[in-house]
Image (cartoon, rainbow, N blue to C red; front, side, top):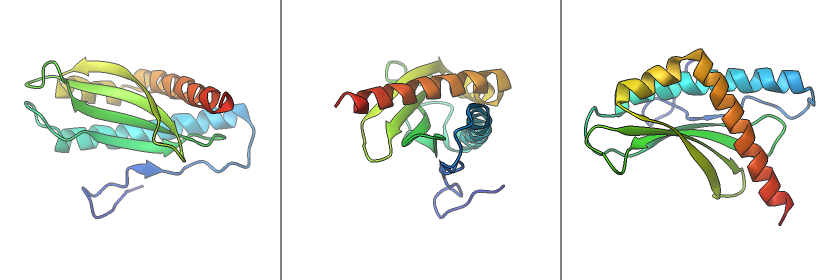
Length: 145
């Protein structure tokens, strides 16, 4: 599946899940497939858009989380403490109708370390778990309003 749009030849939003199933195993499979695709696209974007050294505009890829009103987002940005040669990977979640983002840093390293992390299937499973936990935090926040 090739994603295209006018900006950087990527559509960085995936709407891969429809909300007509309550099957937990099926939703987990959807999350793993969506995260796999997110990591693939973000790895490619990191390779093409992130410089080895210096500051740059953050890049991100997101998708709708199955059976929720939330989106998961992975972000690569320069490290604020060492922008010359370090980058950060973070994962986040937010409600589709809000800009309130709950996030956590996943990795601080070089451009290549970020790419290697994204391409490792074991790490993708960790990112699925983190995205689900962050989505639960988003739901908890909105349930308590």
